[in-house]
Length: 611
View 1 (cartoon, helix red, strand yellow):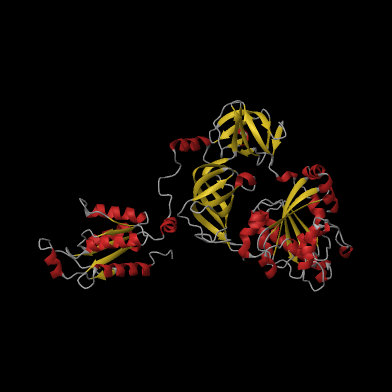
View 2 (cartoon, rainbow, N blue to C red):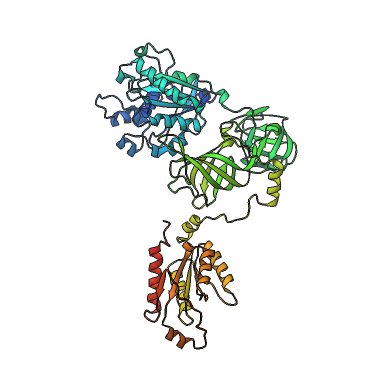
């Protein structure tokens, strides 16, 4: 580190040149609580001399180990809560380099309740390091971490059997753990699984091999990280470039800029632009440092085409013979990352590549039991849960299976009400491709879905602070039900509630029911006092609007008073409601008291809470 500091002071250009050409490896460290993830990373940084003097001094002051040794975990556990509890909560990223490679480390939590943090840190990793406590062996948490790492498509797995110093560097203990772990990881699909016995605290087999494990002839942790082959991890077969922006500095230049997420593109290659389906050839591949003859993942480039094609942000450039899948519906694994559960009745915005499209999660097929790792039935997903779902977009997406192509197989879901990222997803292989012609027809038609509302009841509640309901006021002519309806509307409006009285002028019962349902569907408190003298009338109202959304108020004013108020009205045929939600006699209470009573009943019913 001192050599680098000297180089930074004397020759910054030389320092940058020294590191910019090195291959970059991203790895994530995962494990159960107290398995030593943060200690291992701290030891790596310390023993490769990638810790600045002031950082070293700060850790030395903060260390409180009985032996007086450095607490290497403090190099990554930077949050106060982490230090107080002795656990990793947030994802900590650290950077270091050796003569062979550059590294980005993600130190992730081991707790189940921080699964979303682990997923965030592991989503771009080439290697997962899973730590196993030699004293405890392979725990269920270790299998959980391996399963999640495989789900995220991490190709290489390094199992570091830690705390070997506490079992006397016993080879038998190490061999049993290796055998046990291999049995549970056979079906996970890693390209390779490597084991190494270590003591992160003592530095055994972390940076160099130790004589304490003379029976072990494999690499150290750093030796593995420096030599594990990752060049073939990138998909160089299927060219994909999601267009991020169109560069038009003058009339003679029009380029499409973005990052090559997979594959290789060469000058002169035939290109298809999606979703237009138009074809052209690559005229030039431009970069800040000058033109290239070819580009490959993960380079950021600007491509110019020989033909004028209408291309904008969110479109995808690909080779015609290796096109992505095309479809509106697909299966995916979803990691839920928000306190508010998944709502299958609302729509979200999917961020896929450089495009943003409204989608809905049609169905949750199952979720993963984080203890048994089996799939169990589920209808929704809560914070840190992982499920298998069906997603439908409002127009076609151009995607690949996540295991084939991380760049076009991954997505995030965003809540459009508050712009929070609520989930991360990995698309699985699906045979329900739509076809380019069908996708184009839908785009030209302006919609790919059957027409229905894109706003769920939960979204309406979050916006309005209330559930939609119909307050249907029944009673004799002259009972005062219309007066009560309009008084309720005024009070609800003054309280900031969205309420309306349906005007009965020129309408019949059927049209009033339809109007009440429409307003209730929109989340309004709908007030109606239209005559509904027969029980069959009121049964029709409940059947149409929904029993749970009807609040019937029987205005039971004395009949003699009603006849006095309305001497010309027809009082025959009125059937008293059998089970109204509320009964009010306006000859015993005044209008304000009646309004108070109705509002209290609505509050008690949970009309203004989501439960």
